[in-house]
Amino acid sequence: MFKALHTTGRYLLLMRRTFSIPERMSVYGRQLLKEMEQLGINSIGIVLLISFFIGAVITIQIKLNIESPWMPRWTVGYVTREIMLLEFSSSIMCLILAGKVGSNIASELGTMRITQQIDALDIMGVNSAAFLILPKIVALVLMIPVLVTFSIFAGMIGAFATCWVGGIMTAANLEYGLQYWLTEWYLWSAYIKSFFFAFIIASVSSFFGYTVDGGSIEVGKASTNSVVACSALILFADIILTKLLTGL
Image (cartoon, rainbow, N blue to C red):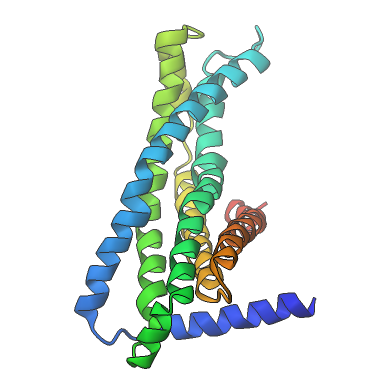
């Protein structure tokens, strides 16, 4: 318990240093664009690939498990859309990004720490926490709606692919189910949850990398710990946010 409280206190102190007014906005702007490309744009490929196949698998599983003469055929498309909007494209996709993006951030900052690059910035009077961590947090928070949107559309295309290639149902029935009784708030809920998850991934991973103490072995441990911590916090936050946003 004491170790958890100590770690939480160090995290909060680091975040206080991180969210300070930038000294030179032009430098922060260039760093932000670099992080948006590295953390966001470079993650589009894996988001599209995973979402496409998950959308296809969900459609097949729903078709096999709820097929009934009493059940409308468009129900498959409706359930697939709800799963993609409510959980996969926001929560599960962020869990996947915690493994890719989170480990990347932790290992990058950890390497900078053990090679004394962060110490050099501090000696020069630069707020290293704000300079290195703030652009990562802002970049991921800005790019996460793009990734969620790509995930939703890729999942829908994967669902249609099962109709065109697998022939498990007609595309017209699937399309009707995807459009049936669409609740706009569910889409906004997916974006709102993803904002919180993006902050968790960027800030927690940065904390573990920034506070590395030791050699190269510790960098690997920090990368692993960051993924585990981000995953646990995302799942915990998902429960709370789902409760708040759905009003249940």
